[in-house]
Image (cartoon, rainbow, N blue to C red):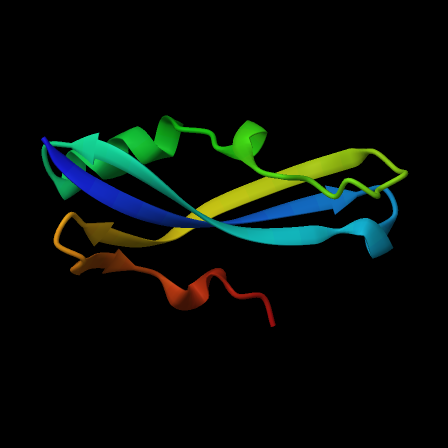
Length: 87
């Protein structure tokens, strides 16, 4: 098994748009190869592990998380998608 570090962008949408936040987080997972890891990631949810806006007074209406970078155990970039940034 190999260790991979996966970078995510997590967007929280609140009833009050002024409370919306975005977080960038890294998690480490093990898999035998990149293809197997990507299969796992399609079913994996990190939304409960991410810090939300503690000062928000309205409710969360949507949570969107997407991974955009995967680095192997040697620190080599093995997959990226820079389209995660909203313009």
